[in-house]
Image (cartoon, rainbow, N blue to C red):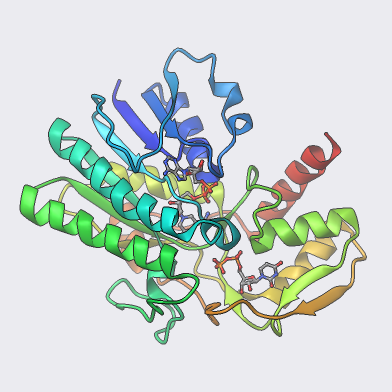
Length: 312
Ligand code: NAD
Ligand code: UDP
């Protein structure tokens, strides 16, 4: 039984990761300050003997004994990470320093949940890991993008300087049950709007693209990365190598919900990337991984979750 710390463990991805690790019989310490996470995401785990919850902000040091660390703590949706941008940078940077310092002291292997946002508004397409990105360092997304880029720098310097066993994954847009209904991300917005019969908010002309990965596939990649050979540190892209425009996504959501909402066009937020799709050759090679769940199946599961949640 390994002692595993999951920071951000009561958030969307973190709670699914805790589910998988608890089911595997590992000893889980879930650390969260509940900025965007919720106890409802992990209530079902609270009675389990191999699950422990600690309210803690990772921008402050933490002294615990663990064998592995998954560092997921950080708000991920633009409206949440822009609410308190200074705190977002602190979470990424001070949080990484604290988690890396802990990993160094207890000699734990540590995985960083990085993001496709490190590529910014990419001029290489699809994005490969060697691409250094096109990020506006002073824009409204910079607190998140540059925070995550700096965290990657810290991970690689701890690896080179202190021989720490690191793993860095760059996560592309992921969706599924337990995404916060009001977090402003496109999949949750469109589904909630369609179920409530409200207008579907398309930002810009709706021709911008994203590639959507279902949460179960993503968590599988994360687990495989943690257990991969020590020499493979990443960064590795994890996401779905199929791209959709936001208009196509809206049509799919309306079809699957049976909704009749009309589409309305709103101004595009600043620095909104125009195109995004991962090249996942590296993940295929090292992790033997590629996503299995189709967008239709994943959206259906997510719609069922929101129907239940909105009826509560
Ligand atoms: P989320 O907002 O649901 O979860 C983040 C969790 O971190 C929340 O539970 C929140 O309360 C916690 N948290 C935030 N600041 C903290 C702090 N200072 N100390 C302790 N806990 C803190 O987001 P998510 O979608 O589950 O994302 C999880 C991780 O994956 C994030 O690091 C995010 O950057 C990364 N990621 C997610 C996506 C995606 O599409 N979901 C894409 C790329 C990267
Ligand atoms: N978007 C949209 N309508 C919404 C929410 C988002 O058209 O109600 C667009 C947004 O402008 C972006 C894409 O959907 O181009 C994905 O946005 P999200 O916030 O989910 O993720 P990110 O931009 O971080 O990839």
